[in-house]
Image (cartoon, rainbow, N blue to C red):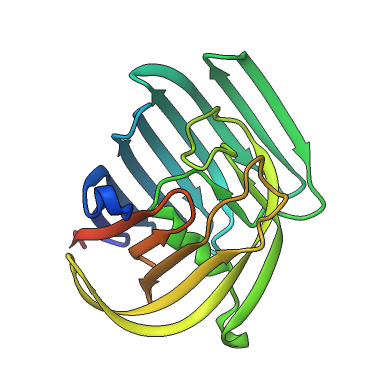
Length: 238
């Protein structure tokens, strides 16, 4: 076999005092690195908090970590919300989607450079995005103006559509951590500098991932959200 495949499970819990440790969702993902270097991730996400969200995503990246294409299907409040396909070209991004509120939508957005990342809201992809950070420059902050997301909603519960934005990544440092799936040498990052980029500013978000493959290990969102995410299972099929 010339490809490698990983499979994992992430548990969503609350950090709010009145719900501390209470499970509020889950995610099952499969990631394959193909022989040509392309990376394809499938994720099924469930958020139990009302209105509940079910999200199914397939995201493809090239060997440099740039997005190629992505499909998203959403159910919100037990009702179909939307489904769409996005494709990233060197000079533009395009989307063909249908959602409950707006019906059929076609987007084409010209860009001055390749889109560095497409945020499609599975928690497992929040660590893959961190590959954009240049670790050779050490701890600090780096800003990326050429990003897009499939929904500006913090839970990703609208659309899907293309929404352009920029945000920063802060590399906090290297740590050794333990989660339900095991103990790992980890990289600790923080999402920063998104003020003014979204309809509502996203609360502080810390993410820990593996040093080698950027597998999501754990994450914590502060502010009004007070949520926590942890890898509970990791299986290598290769």
